[in-house]
Image (cartoon, rainbow, N blue to C red; front, top):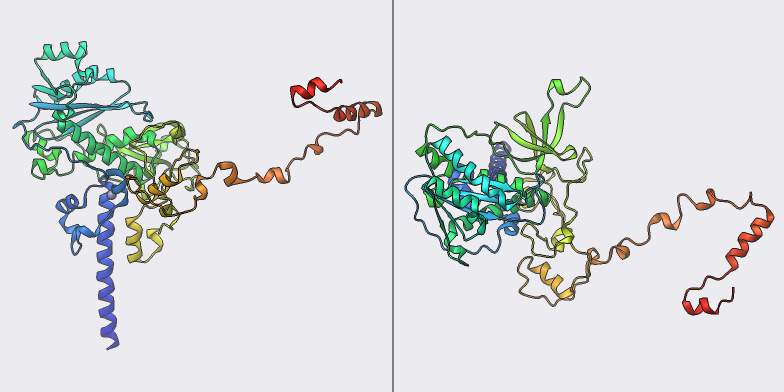
Length: 474
Ligand SMILES: [Zn+2]
């Protein structure tokens, strides 16, 4: 009897573990694929959702990254063959340059397959040579000439160089009417999708904002490989390959979580026998030109592409308590200089910050799931030092991004918002100095007359105002 009970409870616990490991898999896929929606994830991997309801998954990162989504009018009409029309849009300049120095990007989206190419821009005028290079690449790789570009009314496409280029190549350039960017809706929607995914990637592992360009390129890579409703739930890359089946030059490597810790193998000729065999880096994107992961070593500002990489996907590289003592030296220290709304900024309500974050590795399975629905670590919040308006502050606590409904509860201002001098108090060293000046200076070796002179100096009052100075006859 006991044996039967035991086996029954074992099978119950086994099924419990299997459901929970399924959930963990769902969360890992969600994070690796740039916080892809759970419904799309279920379409891609139905087996992952065995005995699981898609409605039970709720991701806070997605809330912060994709909230306020206003639907654009969607038109499903498409070209029948690739590269008939390319939609293009320029984004930027962004206040904070990417680690590569880029300040914006340009998108090229094929109307037929929705395949997207993104190029980072240091200045808008870079489009003048990037666009011709792009058309050459398409012609060379796919043997097709682009028939037309559709852009908004941005002057960047109407400069002298591009106008004469379009004319020479016989490319028709269609543009939207003045002040009606909706006519370039596909490119606008794609930019929105890219930025939503970019924010999710940055928030996931607290990646500093000066990595936004790498996150945008990673988002593009992922979106091209994720099924889209508009093209019959095929991925743009798969759909493109149906037209060009011989072009099989896109590498297939498993996705990993952006911003996590990676250990890149150091090859024999780069080390001696007692040197470390791996370099701790941050995973920042997928290489298009080499079959490997692109990693970055901030201390020497080096990019490394390697297949010999091991990942710790649950650990953010930008964690000050990391084992190697890596300082977050590339962290954006200029955040407070920007008063404008910042699309890569976000704030977590302070109550959530103070709540403990449960680590998946040390808790029971059901608690792990709660941990999974929250962020792995408290997310870093930047604030200006000015004393905020209390009412507004409370509104932010209740509605992080809306702020419409003001709360009238009388919550005390958290310590975080006090001026730094009050929060930190006096420094310890000023109470009992480590190196008192008397250890280094002494009057002992002065002659008596010199001592008298010095003590006389101390007795002379120093006027603090003009009035005192005029009254002082000395
Ligand atoms: Zn998410």
